Length: 65
Image 1 (cartoon, rainbow, N blue to C red):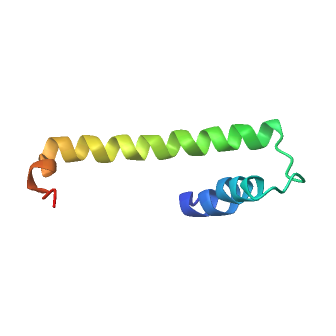
Image 2: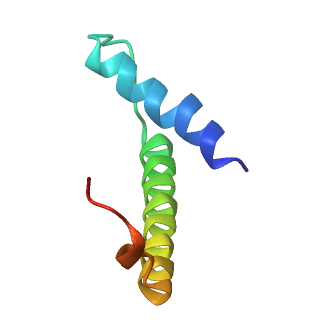
């Protein structure tokens, strides 16, 4: 299972087709469940990075310029 592949070949493919006017894209319940699982996984990764940065106080070492 590759998050990048799942993101690129599934979620972004559907998103890009829809946003460019392709109305032939059909999203069924399984697709929706798959997208929800992917977004939940990605948000877990974001949370872990934020938590790690907080614990290491790495935000104190970053310049704002």
